Length: 621
Image: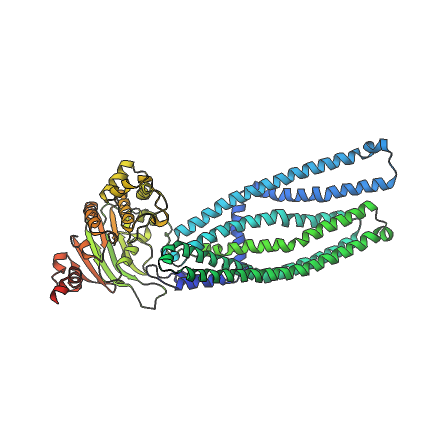
């Protein structure tokens, strides 16, 4: 998969990404996807070699001792009892060694059982830790293109399912698969010398059982993948409704969202039912084979002594071993069902982990060093890769922003203003041309070093469900309380913060929902002030403020911009009127460039926009 096949628009609403996600979710669970999932599971498992060895060893030892050695010893006791009568006073003398052997077998077997539990917990704790980090690193380092094409709730659900898939697979392998394989070898090794014909027939029937079970397993695998995908979609619908609950309630659309949820819930239930029916059909066939195996065993046990001279104790072992083995094989149905679910649950995250990063540091990328803050866009060409061929947002755009200059970007909606700032932040890569900071091509620098040099305040404030103090100090976590309060004061936020019951320690809620739009924006501006970066990008940063708050914050922003290279995107032209320079963008091209005084009298786009906002058009009419 190439970058071109997955990159989509990241600044505007785009349903192509959602369609692609739906197609991926409903794709069958292919063998190569299973292999890649198992490969990642093995990657974390081998980080604990001792626990892995102990899981295998104790599973085999536990099965061999408590299932087979116990029964073998009881067979010896039966043969000894049958050989000659034992008087009451000689019971412990004759059977004492057998009792001690059984005690040792059970003591060691129980110890193996507890070590088996320890090794499983060790593997699962370690595995979930590393898989969670893998998912977090992958998701946090993916581009904004990736994230705007997916539901956040679905990604969280897929991460959780990926981890639970590993846990489920470890459980079924250690507690079911390995003991079953050990049982096969123990049965063959123990019974082959005394009943070779019986072992040959039993082995043939068990082989037929495995072939039938695996064949049906392959048919059920896509159903398990479809079930997991349906569950992910259900989680996504629920997350989308809960995240936007205010819109749901204010528009009275509870019934509509309930309809969407019911549809997704029914799809998930139907997928579960199809998977369940297929598993029941497989269970019926495998249960028939188990019944045939027990029939053959019964015939051999009843006639073994008469036909082959097999002792009573050995006949007891034959029946017990075969019964235990058949029961384990009878659980293969549920075992493979659990394996199906584990791999199916993990499949969606495996696909995500396989996707290439749309924006990635080049090998040997160096940190960006900003000494002055000059910005250059040279021969810039950019288009969304799902757009029509030749449909460029920018094509051959050149723009030089001298160090320390305060630049305003204005223009009608969709002209490319915000896109230009996203390219400066390298949230997407250009197809042609270069973006330079102090002569350094940002595509050759590490992304983190680039973004740590730019204080970015978007139109919609980005707040975490943390305290106000943590949100302000996010870009500079080592800041003192005094510095945090000063930043809040300069952003005109301190007044409302001090009125809150817990002040700076107030939790703001998810996405800052407990604060008003203007309050959220002032916290975001305080964060930018505290970050003290050499480059400042304000994307409609004061749009959510009332006129009084805007006037106060504008003064703070003027101080903040002093000596810094600043790019201010604004629809409200009063925001940029006092800046050093204003660039007007129209259809991805620079159509005007100058100061407010020059452009407001030039008879161009800027003057038209200015007249509309100041009411000059109304006066003319």
